[in-house]
Length: 206
Image 1 (cartoon, rainbow, N blue to C red):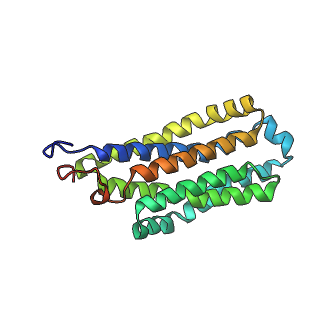
Image 2: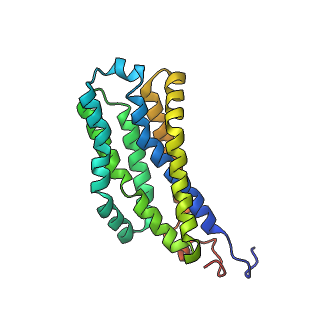
Image 3: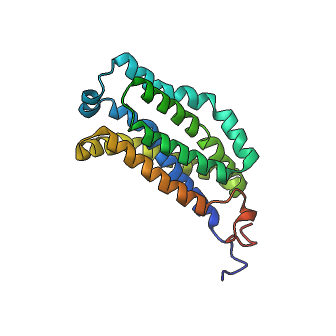
């Protein structure tokens, strides 16, 4: 039982798990930039520099193109189900990338990953808007962005470490994807689209 006069702090958990989402978002986004430099990748797939450039840029094409429709879908169907779906999809696309054996497959996998990740920030900002009082939204948005920047900063080191340790670029993508699926499960269990829907939120926090 919680003191009814003391607000619960579920909103802090929401921001925390959304930071985790942003962390794996950037890790999956940036990892390919390191993978294509690895000896393991280049020995496995003899791609030209032009083909590698297209693979790396493909992600950002669909990522930019689908942000508006992905944000609309989250407003229409709710942040919790849609962002959970987005995390699952881009994690599966990351794992799928590790199974590809040629240029066309890698290109398609990265295009799909861009589509899946496009809804992440529009949806997370909807959560901030619904869960955080006006005076705290800038700080909460900054925390979510920080989660992404930490992921982006650590992505090169973690990716290189996994490739060297496992001896294969594919394994690093499978591990990243598996971690993303775990985060999707944590997100689904922790988050609700609106504070009114969360069973642990008391009247004071609401």
